[in-house]
Image (tube, rainbow, N blue to C red):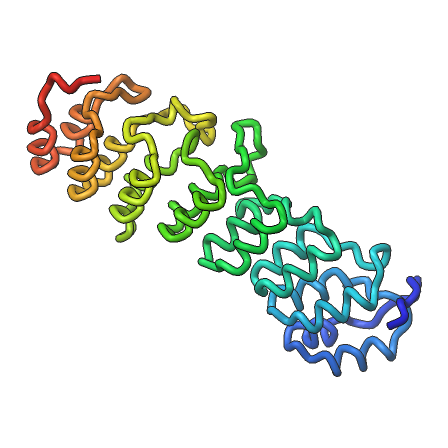
Length: 281
């Protein structure tokens, strides 16, 4: 298909073009474009609209019709394509392979978008094309960045199957707050997540102070204290059975005993009372 030349001519209102892309109506889009000259000023929006709605045939058409100078593909398109599914995302990354590493404001990268939707196809595509399942986060990242590594995203989204998948593909739990986040998770999968992480080797007594980054938080503490704060007795009991110490101190100098006293849950206090004092670490 011949590539159209860029024109300075003014384009008519582009709403019909956007509607064609949203509806996946390629015949209508071709008809509208054939009546015009040059590249529409909203060509970027057309590609984004088609990609976000999963219309890969429209995405393919636009990428074939306009070259890189006429249609600059960037992080906006990569983000929209994650909503549209694997085929749209694949086409966008074929045009700009570096977008596989693109970080989206507040959303992380495409890998994390896939995790949040349990989209194993998209997740595997990103892994196969060089996305890092253990990418480093630092406190120096801008405030709009997603301050979670992929395995933490899987925990936040309550996706234990994604946690195991990431670890199988090279993600590490060392230096993350995955277990701490899981222990304080108020969703119904919290215990399953905690068990998954412990089975995969998470340090049961690690504090956020031990991690490589703190997500900008001045406070830190062990997973047991997070579980006590959320008052989920089965999770607390499991952590204690697996060796969690109630004597590990948080950033304020407090222990699990102090946290339990503040919470005032008698069942939790009884559980802690069963731990011999000689097990202090």
